[in-house]
Image (cartoon, rainbow, N blue to C red; front, side, top):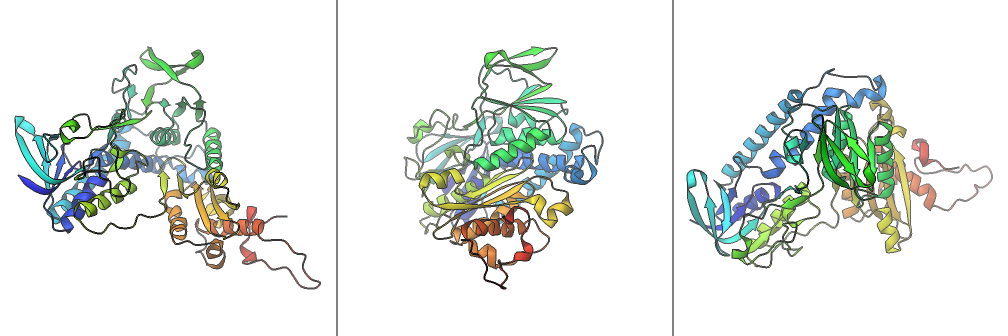
Amino acid sequence: MQYDVVVIGSGPSGRRAAVQASKFGRSVLVIEKGRRVGGVSVHTGTIPSKTLRETVLNLTGWRERGFYGLAYRVKRDIEAGDLMARLHKTLEHEVETLDHQFARNRVHVLRGLATFLDPHRIEVQMEADETRVIEASRVVIAVGTLPLRPPHIPFNGETVVDSDELVELKSVPRSLTVVGAGVIGVEYATIFSALDVRVTLVEPRTSFLDFIDRELVDDFVHQLRDRGLSFRLGSKVQSIQFENGQPVAILDGGRRVRSEMLLFAAGRVGATDRLNLAAAGLAADERGRLAVDPKTFQTAVPHIYATGDVIGFPSLASMSMEQGRIAACHACDNPLPAAPSFFPYGIYSVPEISTVGMSEEEVRKAGTPYECGIARFRETSRGHIMGINGGLLKMIFAIETRCLLGVHIVGEGATELVHIGQAVLNLGGTLDYFIDNTFNYPTLAEAYKIAALDAWNRMTPRREPEADVPAVLPETAELTGDAIEG
């Protein structure tokens, strides 16, 4: 069997590459080793974790506690079955949608394990020991990643688990230790904390989420500590022992952390170990990742591309989709779409974090004179209506040009709100856009206006008003909280 484009993996980047190549009139085959299409994103990663988050927030009544108190519950006793029911329904819908998308675009799907025989031939090991050899003019490797499972961690699938196993939760623990304060660890730690599980987050480094603006992280940590989540930063796990069937993490210095369940989420590795990359003329790094041209996503072998998490940072489903599309365009000899200058990063923790553009630390390092504007969600009328007590929106502007440099949000709806800042940033907008335009009232998006006025106050020289002439600021009636100085 011969195809113009063969895509290995059907996650976000694989499916986007396959559909795009098909729209260019190429014959396309997707090889998926799982029983159903969707890859890690649909079955154990993005969709399950975000569905679990939404389920927890709904069943606990988390969003209403600002009004009704911490004891408020929608459902008093939440069990694993309550969490899994919505998850399985969501996954079924995602798979059906993807199956339909492939069928509609005439993308062929073959279920089995792909192994390179040479740079153009791929053997697929299917069920019942059946094998097929596929010839491909172009190949896109989109196999994603697997959880890192160090040999000294006694995984058992019940009390010591990785992030893939957590989505098959059999019972809700009363206490949880999360090892690894990366995006996955932070998301699950805060989700279970919202479920009123006692959570301890262990991280060998003294800081975490270092790519996020520090002021945002400080606010985030304050909110988490305020609700009882414990941090053990600068503490490496030496070993894990069991006492009365419960895992006990032994940290540097002898400190012990006991809990009913331990989630090890300290990294992931590229799922490339069974591809026989050497036969294709490729080699992965120590984490199983492939190096690519950042503009075309070609590997060292020009007709073989790699996209998605298997190439490393930023490991975002949204960016993986764009990578797949760009790779397909190049593979099919079509003009490459211009890559956006800035893309948003979303962390679906509780509360959410989302950021686009430069952090304050990056702006300072670049030596650009700047000013910041901050709005706290509790200052907005919508925030009062929703009972929001925490969260903020921060914008950074260049003083000389007034151009927007970065937008950073922590709090309810952050991953949705960030797209306003993303659009202004990519279009080269300035402080004046937020000052001069009207935002719906009451909305959380109004925080953009408040933050812009806060920055305007700091950037605009003060002058004493002339006699009998009142000083007028733009949109003075809307200035609240931190947007007013002096």
